[in-house]
Image 1 (cartoon, rainbow, N blue to C red):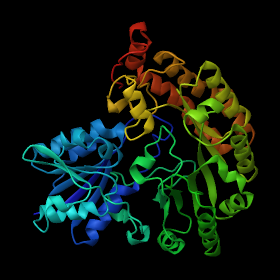
Image 2 (image 1 turned 135 degrees about the horizontal axis):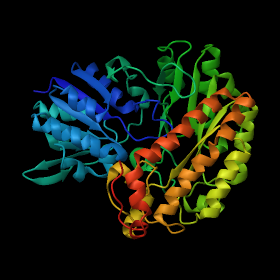
Image 3 (image 1 turned 120 degrees about the vertical axis):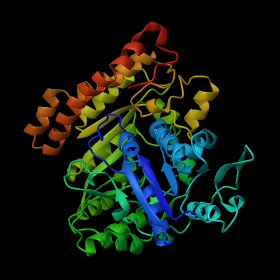
Image 4 (image 1 turned 180 degrees about the vertical axis):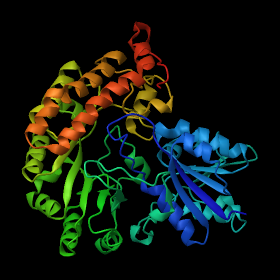
Length: 471
């Protein structure tokens, strides 16, 4: 009988600019809330693999939500749970795209959005319905893998409860805040994205159609939090629908919220200066923008749908309003070369972007890129632990694998040089200075931690072939 359910998310232990700023995804807490509201003893845990193994969780059913980079750690936790007789159901992006792989470490897998299917699975395990009735379920019957009909995306996001973060155990129960200090509460107002960039798996998970929570529903959730709370809007594109975003921002201003908040937007947000003004009035302090590349050929290759001039305009308009811009760029597209990498770093420096991440193109399962590179035989390996956007996982065309990795390391070293970091302080950009100090040291620590991987990658025999596992 299933009376207690534990929803687990294994923390990533990779080093990157957000390593110190722990922010769980919303899904685990939301699922625990749904089950708790149905009378079950439910909890959500966001802990490292070591902490989860040491905890020796006692529960009737463990749900594990995993992204690709945390899949190996998640599988290790699942193996331990099953050895102790606890059934495991996998979910989340990686398991949704690799369900049969997940079944080698778990008893069940829920593909896609699980807010409706997980309660139905619990009912089935309690004898209240059959497993065949659970949408999105992948399971075994008499040794054969069975795939049930897909789960339908949830059209009415207002029907979902507000995540109850009192159910979330983060060990020290502390969420680090990027630039702001204190704790961050994640809030999501929409799902889906119609842009379908070739390297992104969001559309595979949540679809190409935007679905929005009503303004009244979002405001009701925000009213639960402290007036000066730090909020991170988890939307893939917070300003996807200008009318909807304006309505929400106006409501936040009218209620005199004092939130400091950050979110993800596209460069095209700057087409609407009035919307930018509203964002600032409503408390926006930081935006995260996936610029990806300054090479028009690479932008076309990834189906990004933006121009370099649009990127430049966005940085200018956001800076004019005092908003911190965190830019994300990706190296490794077929159109890329050492010259385009250099030009990208030049752009980030020249436009005075406050903080950046230079990422390596990563073929995530569920993306068009993964399918293409897999079909072309260009994947180095499927050691998912390396799929964190900081390791070379495929054979690039404009570089050797080593040269591509080195380009990323040098890009961070150049952007976060001591001269430029100190320059931020001299220009009164304290937040940018603090991030710069942290990022400068982080780049050095990453190289030390990954020294074995880097030595092996540098060998000519490995420059474009199967690579050793990182770590």
